[in-house]
Length: 441
Ligand code: GDP
Ligand code: MG
Image 1: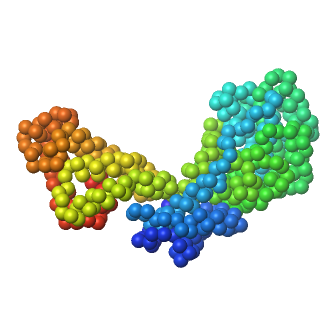
Image 2: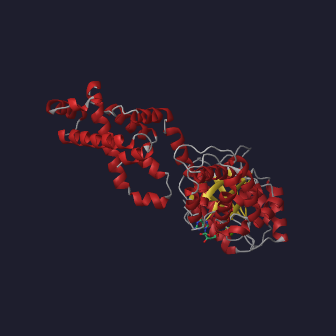
Image 3: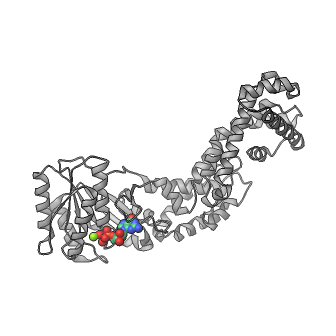
């Protein structure tokens, strides 16, 4: 979690609504966090305006803070903005389906061409042909030949003496004659937006009439991504984006900028130099990355649905009125916790640095303990649950056998229960959530 957002999340505990008064400061932090993630400024402005509209009046439930609720709205909106549309390649046309790769030099077009070839061959069982229209760099044509071989696809030869449009036409003809399902066309890079090269790729688009025109963009490009994206989307009707080099340490804010500017869905993410380093783009996960945190949305939703407010209320009243807290209540607490997806699933949703501190081993143990406690209580009769004092040696043995545990485990549970009962008496109401947390060990 970025420092900014963790601070934000702790703010204004106790407020029950997001209002004009408190939203302004919070949004300033979100805006800074997005800029730090390299989302382009105009895109940030638009985005913040949308979030504000959604956030105003939002209710702050249970133990959450307005900051948590706002950040979860932000994350959801981020994911929605980046995640619309279908993920995989559209090949629904008379074969060969043509996929045209566009983007700056070094963005990862050639590498991605091979990754897509492998994906199509292995996952979609397609017969795939690749061709390079990069006539300026013979090495680039050789590069495509090598990686196409690794992908298990076929490579169509081309060389620097030919015109890109002639290469394209020849490759298409070959693909058609030999019943290829897909033709992937790699193109020349441009170091910066360049009129002549833009004209060339437009011409290629005209000749090939591709069903997919993919804009390949380096996630590390940051703020510049917006200009590149603008130029390419004005020149070509883009159908999708591939965001490469997400294995780097950038926060990937370019995704939001590119999505907003091109309007095209982000279909894939490049996650290594290797040929299998391609993933279907996961907008939810990426939203978490842009904000520098785990899945806060999921955490907030768990809390909202998991805490059975009515049951909690009843219990609080029981405690207040001095009625004994019995093992049935104890069991209800345990199942409440399970409803929230168990301890480790909650931990998974926390920002990674907090989760790391919790330690998976500890969580596993706590989880096992909770399950064991539940098993023990389930082996008791209703009378025993209401009046644990009844449980003497022979009953303990029966319960232990029933739950598949040792007598000492039953003893331990009864001790814990007794402590809890004492604590409950002291609390007389309030602090329910704290108690649930303590039960988790
Ligand atoms: P092109 O000029 O657009 O064809 O770009 P290339 O495909 O030649 O890639 C440029 C450089 O980026 C090469 O060194 C690739 O290995 C590297 N590259 C491409 N995609 C990725 C990726 O997803 N992750 C990493 N780490 N490197 C990548
Ligand atoms: Mg290349």
